Length: 392
Ligand code: PXP
Image 1 (cartoon, rainbow, N blue to C red):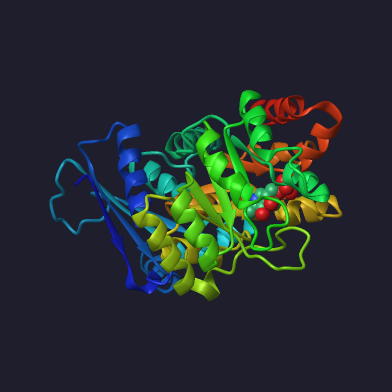
Image 2: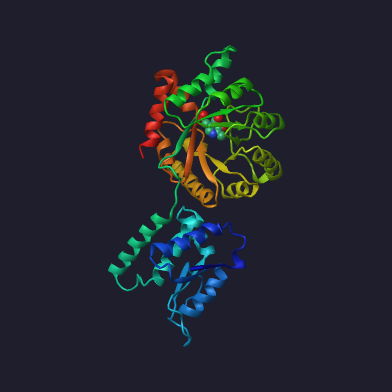
C-alpha cells in the first residue's frame, strides 16, 4: 500500500469521503512518478494539529498542512529508501478555509494533500520566488489531473414537457399532446424527457406517463411526490429514474427542495422499493450541505440541486452568492459519491454558468423551453438551449 491514510477520531463527525481522498493520494503518487514510494497521510483535527505545530515549528495554534520528509528528523533510526515521509492535514482548518474560499471541503483537502506531497517530493516554496511559482504551477496541474468531473464533457439536457400538458388541460381536450412534444424534443437532440405526475393531475395525466414509457427513446425521468398512489404508478411504469419532489396543492410550481433530513425514514423506504425495481432515485434538494449528507445517508443515487434561488436573484451579488452555493454543493455531492443534476427556473440567459459546472450530469429545463417553443417552434427552442449548454 503506497499511501497509508489515517483518520483521527477527532474528525469522526466530518462528512469525509475517505475512499475518494485515498484514491486521490494514490493517484498523486502515480502522477509524481513515485509509485514505488510509501507515504503516510494523516487527517486530524485542529487540537492535534496545534500540538504538532507547537512541537515541530514552535508555532501556536493549528495550521492547515505539515509535511515531514523521511530522514529529516529520525533520531538516528534508519529510514527505508522508498519511504517519502508523512503529511498531516487538519480537516478542521480545511473546512474553515473551504467556507472562506466558497469551495468544498474535499476540494480544499485535495489542495492541501497536493501541497504536502510536493514538499515530500522536494519542492519548497520558501526557497525562492521562482521555486514558489514552480510549486504553485505544479499544484494547479496536479489538481486538474485529480479532478474527475462528469464522464461527459457537458451536461445532458432533459426537457420537462409538463407545460405542453398545461395548455392541453386549459381546454380539457387532447391538444397539444406532451407525448408528441417529447418525441420532437428528442428529435431536436434532447437527452431525456421529464414529466411531473402531480397528485392533483393539473397537467400531466396517467395516460401520458404510460405512453411516454413506450415512446421515449432517451431517458424518462418521472418527477413525483413521495406518496403511495404515485409510488405505485412509478413501480408499475418503471421509468428510467424518478425524482422525488415536495408537493403542495396551492403552489404554482415546486417551491422548495425536499426536506430529506426531516423525512429520512419515508424517503429511505421509497428508495428501497425503487431499488428492488431497478429504478434509480434522485432527490430534489436545496443546495444545502445537511440535505446532501441526508441524501447520501438514505441511499439516493442522484440529487437534483434546486437552482430556483439563483435564477430568481434580484442583484448580481445575490446571484453570485447563490451560484457559489450551487457550485459548492454540486462538488460536495459529487465528491461524496452522489450523481448531480440541477434544475428549476433555468432559462436561455442564466443557464450557461450552471451548465459549465464540472460536476453536473444533467439539467432539467421546462418552462423556458416550452415558452419559447410557442414563438419559435419546439425543435428550434430545444436546439437553441442545446447550443448554449453545449457551447462550453
Ligand atoms: N426540476 C424540478 C424538480 C422541477 O420541479 C421543475 C419544475 O417542474 C423543473 C426542474 C423545471 O423547472 P422549470 O420549468 O422552471 O424549467
